[in-house]
Amino acid sequence: MPDRTPLLAANWKMHKTTDETEDFLADFLPRAEDSGPEVVVCPSFPSLQRAVELCVQSRVRVAAQSMHEESEGAFTGEVSAPMLLDLGVQGVILGHSERRQYFNETDEALARKVPAALDAGLEPILCVGESEAQRDADETEGVLTRQIEADLANVPDQRLGAVVIAYEPIWAIGTGRTATAEQAQEAIELIRGLIESRSAEAASAIRVLYGGSVKPDNAAELISQPDIDGALVGGASLEPGDFAAIVDAAR
Ligand code: PGA
Image (tube, rainbow, N blue to C red; front, side, top):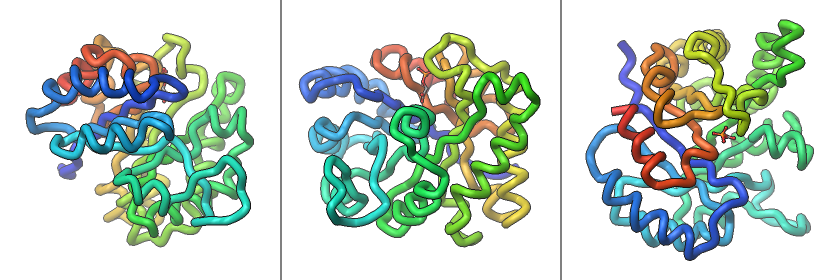
């Protein structure tokens, strides 16, 4: 049995000021002290530094929600890996469906961003997933294959195990319509198989999370599936009690 530590990541999206970040962590950090799964919070850029300062003495790590692939340059409004690292940030979400859909984040850009994050020492959390129309048209396998192959094209086989992948079916994000444990397991097994075709070692090391309407009452069933190594949580991660309950479900 592969020994993969479960990972729970809180994707706050465009929520929480620095004061609200502080309030959340004051409540949440004492609840997250026990050993067990790894826990990551992903605040918006302005709250990253405060979150790092507050989490430094805890087991909780801080990741950003996006970054540019270049380390510096004329890219107004963008943030680079060295800038995140400078704040003490340890990871970054890449390719979230909201970035793909509203901000035109492409597979070509992701093929540069994932290795840029790894090279900088940031743990990338790469999101992939099909739309409802694609699932209905039986295209889930094709979409996931295309995204995984394209987005990880420039990551050497021996480094694949250091990437975290989040399978997030778009139809389940923010809709309250969670994938069934079987649907999530099936898609994540497929993703692990795609990694295995490049490296068996990476396939047994890489952590693949599920995301999409994860709540305290469905987390345990999802995370107990053999290939599901944790969750990327949006809405339910905004309340410290709910996110702590999801972390507990992975223990
Ligand atoms: P949700 O979001 O938990 O609110 O569905 C998940 C995500 O977008 O990462």
